[in-house]
Length: 228
Image (cartoon, rainbow, N blue to C red):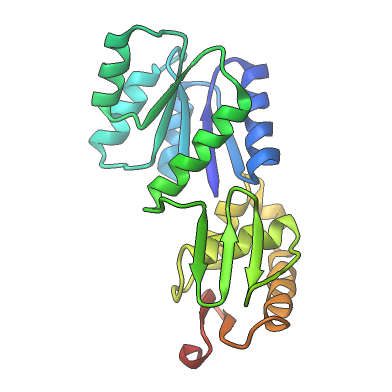
């Protein structure tokens, strides 16, 4: 999953980004002003935007307004130093999905971020199931046919992303964009190795599902009988 953090305070921005990367396993991009935030949102698809209000160039409220005017339904969590009820109502009416008042607890922010990402994908529970595979996004654990499977962090993120799109062909570029930040080009030569290792671990537990590599198209997780 890929998150955009929009915060002009450098230390706070990096603390939030590090927490989301290390605490939730997300790929995170950082924008220091509203103008860059809009540019990044136009260039990539995010699963969540964490948006400060007091931004240079373009204020956070305007960033949110423009996203919603353009029918961008990406979940948005507002960070604000303003706690007045009127401001909160206005933000929610403008299209914000959640807000946190500074100073805040980083652990709570990570928990809320996970909830918003799940909600954005139409998921209410922390577990996702497809055939014999069950993942718990909160614990980042995987069970196949009732048995635990040990995956590396990247293998887990590949599987999680594919499980949100079962039977769908996911291009290598799309997968990379949601696994890494804007340095993902440096990882493009290793994604095949992660997919190969993941495939072997799944095969060791079940023959019901196949993780396919479709040359020139991408990857697909599908029931064995539907694989081609």
